[in-house]
Length: 446
Image (tube, rainbow, N blue to C red; front, side, top):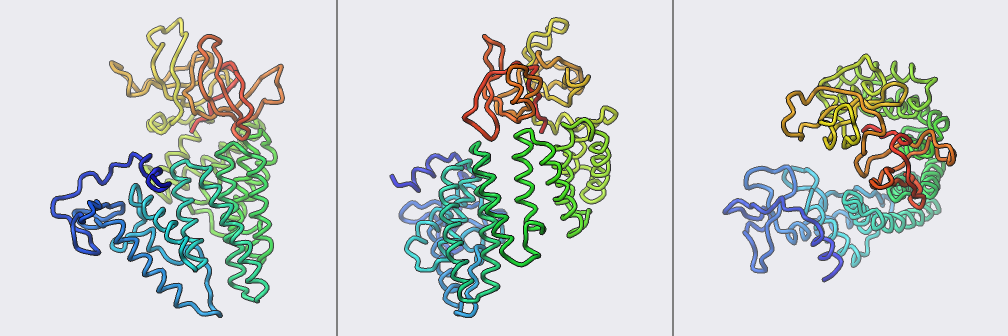
């Protein structure tokens, strides 16, 4: 079994199991072919439309790509990654392929591009497949492809500069920056914060080589700067993160205005750097209140981003209550060791916010608990009475013998019931693992 078959076999996507009777491939107009190739669909088409054989889609995409690449001239080479969407979008509804179909098309494109003489086709295939790997949490595989892609882009940029293709050179610098940003994201997911910082700096350096409007101080550079700030937050370096995120907010606000989803998200990120610093709590609350009103006005009260703003505000402002907050919380724990309310022990709760200067959590019973008369009732629990679920991100605090770890972000791996300790690893340094009492790690609410 080849790499393609092995990887696809590991996926459990069954979205195309029920194909309507009589459905046919919209390209060849046949049903399942003689080789028992199934009909698949992974787009926005409805009814019996949009079904196709992967081989038919691949043949059609390959033919379109060759026609498009052959139409270029030496004076207009246009080496841009997203030049054609035939491999990743449905030709009927024009929506991106998802699920099994998206994976198969990405792999087939990559395999066929190996035989192609066109460098842009190879670049597009590598970008498409790396995106699939990242979506499937295959960060190591995505990282390998992205590093090769960056090397390719750097060589092409050098050639374009030498030959005087100014617009092509500028486009390739943007590609180098974008790929470097994706490499940094992969490294962050792998817990390699130092290497991620290097990748982000390489991306900013690529932007600085281009036109002034595409420098690290441009809108294009804010995505990378924002990611650098997230690493500083993870390392407990909130002052550095705060300065970077203020810069991001300022650039995006001036360039695109404050009434955009991008600006709203930027404010939320800035608040994450302000909240751990008590002297900025009033500013954080003020920014979030404005953000809530801005999001309600722009997107509506039921939009996920609006609800997230409300949830963030409810976390730090005790005067704010919202009936959707518990439903929006994605931070859960199991109650243990409560003597005054033994009926709560063993119950799963959603953590709402910190109370009493960080000594207790405000919690709400999850709807999955059977026999609860009032699932929306809230109550306070000590940090030591909650076993936070594995995979939750946390913030180390108040350690005495290992005070250098205070303020750093971690991920909770498991709970040692014998020692009554969480086993954690630093978020951007997965080699550092240790045990910590529940009262020495705050669950980061998300």
